[in-house]
Image (cartoon, rainbow, N blue to C red; front, side, top):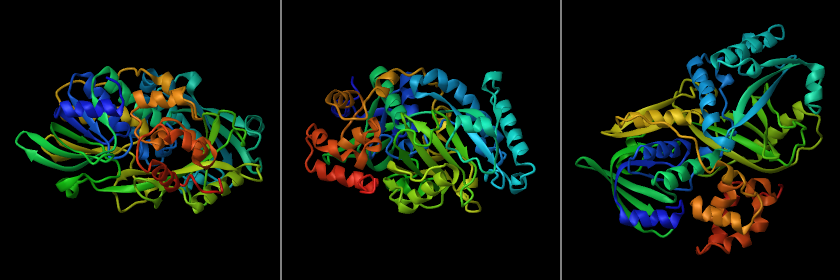
Length: 487
């Protein structure tokens, strides 16, 4: 069975009872589908929008160990993430990419994540080195993976555009990155085409009712308004920032929103040459990342208390973009910062009204919504496998794990410029239902081309038989902030 939407819908016509319903097609839900189906369970995943259209395509693309969380004394979370890197490198193929991150140490500009006492000029370098030593220790790292200290001249050779004024030295440490949206749909394709699971996008759950030993689920196909009734013995809700549907809305986990904005710069204008940079301090005491990404450059930050747009379609507003540009100019010798596109993401954190999103735990938690019905909240990208595994263990007396993924090289080869053969692959094997699925999440066409790739839109929409699809796609690209004429 192919992971195409028509085939998935046909399967739903023939089958209505499942061992497990997974609500939400982000990274955790997709991993849970792959693991559950590999153990022979009848599983279906339903997503009300497109797969990975929420936080799982809007991250900073890092599978990091969480060095930022050491000052918060979250040693268990950091150790868990660092050890998870060692597992994921064996499972994700080309979707796991080791990355060296450079952290420059400036006089009068200590790292904002450190406690104030450790940001003083006299001890900031030592404090950061101690943190990196602990980072290496918690990750049981080999000698060739441990952090390095380099002086000012070596930093300049490595990053010639990084400003030298007040620069004291730098540290280099190991982390990793991924393509979050492509990882999600690769997990789903493995589950469907290898394990015979079901996964369908644009399927909104309107209601859930307990019926004897099963749950009765009313589902609406948002693309043709057809309604389905299905039954599931167990439910995992991996709904991110969204509440549960129907009468279960009031039982949803209490969460706190944390936003983040990013710019995509064309090519390598900051001369980072494949290295990432952890910039120490923003004007509101956050940190910022500059990262390579498929031949282009990401500039981004997280932990904003508010965001623009909606939970389904947040976007980086003018103030967000100007903020990022100011900080690029603060740390790099550049006169102008030209960007192709921008995005914003919103993730769910454990609700703690006594602290800011910067200090809220990145750990995950489970809530028992009803008998054999759980909701997952919180967590970070690096921990997706563990979170999915733990959620399944709460419901089933089986051992679950993620097998090495197939199809990773194929999805990485999809071009970021329109061609018919790539779009056909996406129809057949990546459940594309709308032009924006292909442009925003199966490829980087909209992120890597001016004005959201609008120039290719007419050629793309010719392949879709959906009424008013051009108008709808332009609206979605505009909602994402991609049709801003300043790009």
